[in-house]
Image (cartoon, rainbow, N blue to C red; front, side, top):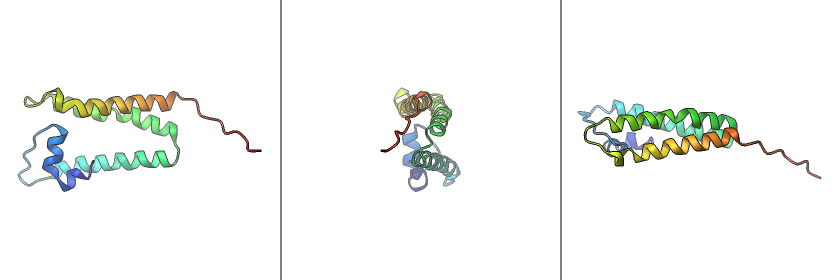
Length: 113
């Protein structure tokens, strides 16, 4: 999703839920895009390394990002809850999965016979 801010910044900004008059300066888009790319790479790395607790911590703490994004979108006079729905869903997903990963008991491996 972050790559969209590099390759199609106007579309990405509209999908995010805000208007942005860049005057051909896409610095914001690059900042937002690399943040999203980093988050995705870190998430994939933790999954591939089977770091369940670290992934749980990351998702739980990272839920502050969509909460902040949602507040930003809802603070604009030209937006409604409809534009905030992706941020609300992301908050719920990050929080619930993060908490589940942190509270689940680790599976003990059975010795092979």
